[in-house]
Image (cartoon, rainbow, N blue to C red; front, side, top):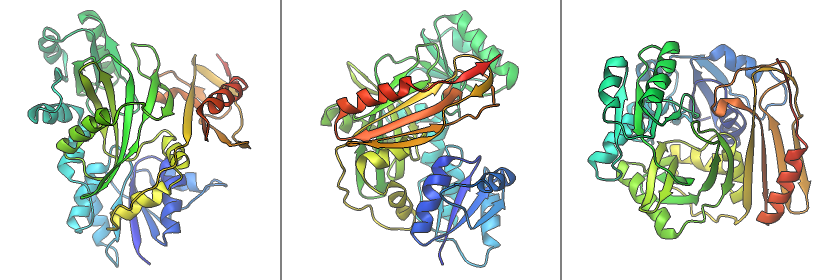
Amino acid sequence: MQELIILAHVPTDSVNDGFIPAAQRLGLRVVLLTDHAEAHRHHFNQAGLAGYPNEIIACDVFNPLAVMGALTCRAKAPAAIFSNSDHLQTSTAIAADYFDLPRKNWHVTYRAKNKAEMRASLQSRGLDVLWHAVVCDQSMLAQAAGRAPFPCIVKPREGVASQQVSLSYNRAELEAQCAAVWAEQPALPLLLEEYIAGPLYTLETLGDGERFCVLGGFQVTLSPPPYFVELEARWGTGLTHRQEAQVVEMIRGFGVGFGACHTEFVMTENGPRLIEINYRNIGDYREFLLQDALAIPLFEIVLRLYLGTPLPELTLAPNAALIRYFTAQCAGRLSDSPEAFVRHAHDLQLSYKPLRAAGDSIILTNSNKDYLGVLRGTGADARHLDTEMARVGKGLAWGITA
């Protein structure tokens, strides 16, 4: 039986409920390499999970040499090496390169993860020129602050999930926001960049290194500044083919070509401006929504690319899809929470998943980590879906005690 090697950091539903079951449906033996082996073993000991890895190996997955060392000790070479983690795309690509397996270009994965390198690479190619600077201490900040255009974004150079991302309107706010981050994580590299106003969209793509397919994209609703918590995503950008083609041209010029890519951009009067290139499958449960809306076996299609199978011709269903995230409004202890459900009514499918359990301690981070639960739905009629999602959402309630 062929072995699929999955590199993972912390347990995620995308891997555990998506890619592992998909791999097993493809007849693959799944070997999970992770730096959190005990956390994964504990996770898979729970009942009701969709998939279980055949083997879990403790490994410093951030170190590609450690990954290669762990795999060369095995009786047979891997059939594919894969990860859906933001953090591990470069380790995965380097290890796959060593074993001469289908892979992403590790130079591109590194630039996508390191947001300062992304900005520099885009600028050097004339694809999207945006003022930016990297600061690691007060001295560097003092030099950059004098040149910064306000309002100005502050975010970790290699951050995820909108954590520690904020908008500063003047130098005093900029300095305070950087100081707050460094108080918790001294010398953490922070990226300062020009703020781009406008509606936020995503573009979801797949490629096999030669063929390239645009699956579509989401319109995203964010919380009010100074934070950027994603509250809702609606399938379908409503943009013209030419506007989406401009985004494709940018990311292709950046080097994106193999596997899944989730790109975030703002549409301005002068065209699209890139926010992030996340060189992996979309997350935050939109991967499951995407699969349902398009009526395709998304996880299997992605994995087959890593096995060397060309990207197939895809017939995409024109369904409506909507996802809403419910965030904690205060810190405290979660006293009660809605239970998970899946409902089918007429042409709609709605599902709710709790992300926190009663008894959990809630600490506000002003990021996607504040989610208490997620409601997602698909159907043929967008207006009907909107109405039903609103009705069901009003019935969800949480209790948080101080």
